[in-house]
Amino acid sequence: MASLKEVKGRISSVMSTQQITKAMKMVAAAKLKRATDNIIQMRPYAQKLNAILQNVTAGMEGSVDNQFAQEREVSKVLIVLLTSDKGLCGAFNGNVIKATRQLLVGKYAAQHQAGNVTLMPIGRKAADFVRKGGYKTVNEYSDLFTRLNFNAVREAAEFAMAGFAKGDFDRVEIVYNEFKNVATQILKTDQFLPIMPTVSEVSEASSDYIFEPSKEYIVQELIPTSLKVQFYKSLLESNASEHGARMTAMDKATENAGELLKELRLTYNRTRQAAITKEILEIVAGAEALSGK
Amino acid sequence: MYLEIITPDKKVFEGEVESAIFPGSEGSFQILNDHAPLISALGKGPVTYRNKSGEHTLSVDGGVVEVLKNKITVLAESASA
Image (tube, rainbow over all chains, first blue to last red; front, side, top):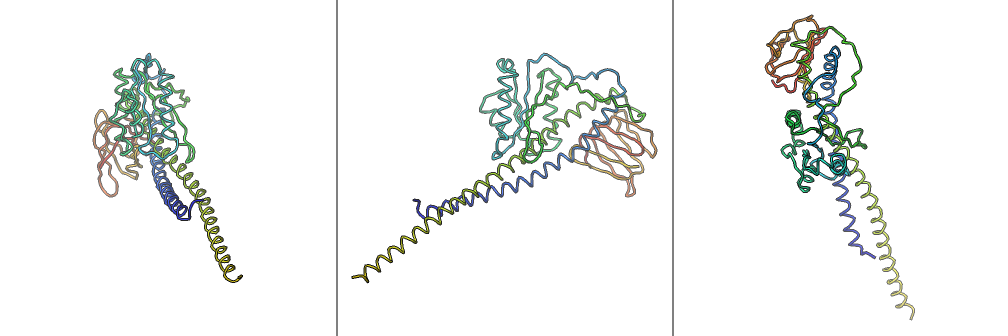
């Protein structure tokens, strides 16, 4: 049986681990609050933008011609994968990496064999994966999560869009975790470019707007903006998911540490009692030996 | 009339204004009370609005403005004072 001192040492080590996981959970909860706030902050912008886009396109005939809507034969692919900078958040990063691998051997196997798949990692864990795998990469945006604001994210989105427009990429996919609630993240692979033709509900223009300079011009201006907003939204979702995942992971860890502590305390008390019993026995036996001559 | 200036990061300004000048993509223009419904693309430049506390200027870099029933909504990719 383990000695008293050993068990005591383990108890205190588990206790300090538990304290750390508890603190990390608290920090994740605070950061999650901020991350969801960011999503909420962005919502009015996105909604208004969509409303205006719909208003403008409502009166237009046929589909909108745009360089970002061009369907081409897919020979060159860019995959944007969003992970976190830090670990200790359960399967969060693993899922993204697994999904990316699956894309590489499944949907885009032919392009991958030909060396035409480029990865754009965002988040340090994704950058690590890409570096170890020796893939073709665009690496300059991997630290976006340290400065998560629209201006920084815009550059990454513009890079992907410019690449698509120039023909460097025929398709751009984003692999990320969508934030459903604190406990649930949904792994998603979204086609970023070319734009998927959306079936817009026919809504008559609510008012007779004056369009300045012209409907077509406004649409051409707004489509890139709405793409950037979509890209930004993926990052915000991923960020919120990360903190949610970490919160649940740390909550579980704290719980497990608690169970372990319970067991250890039981062992400790048992050992202590056994030692006391043994001592009493020895004393009694000693006294007996002295008195009963 | 009511003016709202929104970027993806936050709401930069909202409040009652008397007039506002925007950098339209084809030259700047002013919106006064009871303007007809309008959607216009914006270029890079200053947005100037006048309210009770005087005249204020923000610079935006592109976006779009919607005017409807004395409510002006500016969607800008970025806006700074």
